[in-house]
Amino acid sequence: MAYLKSVGLGCLLVWGLLLNQQAWAQKVTMVTTPWEPFFSANLPQGGVITEIATAAFEREGHQASIEWYPWVRALKLVEYGSADVVMGAYYSDERAQNYLYSDPIYDIEVGLMALSELGVDHYQELQDLKQYRIGTMRGWVYTDEFDNADFLDKRLIVNQVAAVRMLFANRIDLLAASVPVFKHEVSLLKDKVTAENIVLKPLLGKKQLYLMFSKVGGHTAQLVKSFNSGLAKIRADGTFDKILTKHGFD
Image 1 (cartoon, rainbow, N blue to C red):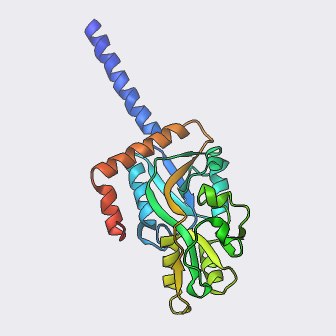
Image 2 (cartoon, rainbow, N blue to C red; image 1 turned 90 degrees about the horizontal axis):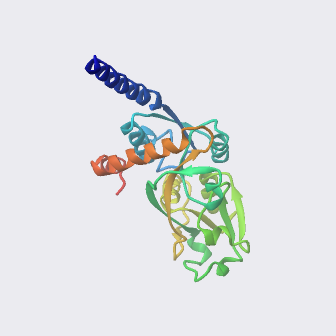
Image 3 (tube, rainbow, N blue to C red; image 1 turned 135 degrees about the horizontal axis):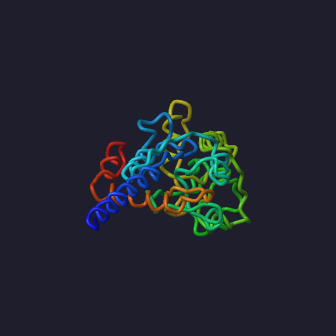
């Protein structure tokens, strides 16, 4: 009888664990704004970061989907718990008050772009750039030094597409942006623009790309842990590098 009770208890424990795993395996709603060449509805599998994030979640039993919104709206949807994750964000202390961060996913160079005709190809300190109109994207963060440089003439722009067009239209003098994103947007305009462009030296820096998770809900911390575990697994078994190569990234 004691043996039967022990077997029965063991079966109940296994069954409970299985039910718990099934309950925890969940659908994850990711939101972001199109940001080619890294992610967009126009790219295969939604782009390299989308496929990496989806694969990491799937490795831990979660089904992730992606929805596209203006950047500021995407931030608000996750902050208030209407979506689970903002995909593809830089870190800032201010954001960390409202979101939980994943482990870093990918490093991106961030710099200042200009047309060659401006006659500026480098600077020693940000103070050297006070005279220029600098385009920045609304709701974005760059580097602490740049973000806190209130002496700069920063012009908020709704997205990178409009920002690049404004640079070539001479409506701004400099553009703060991800270097790969800027080069991609310029490539789409190659039949419409002839002015040469440069990236000022030095770069503003390298920024790590993360997922930002909503703090609303009881399983948020566990979901972050689960994603990080899945990300580590796809890095370890080569899936991560295969996805990078598939999308043309190093």
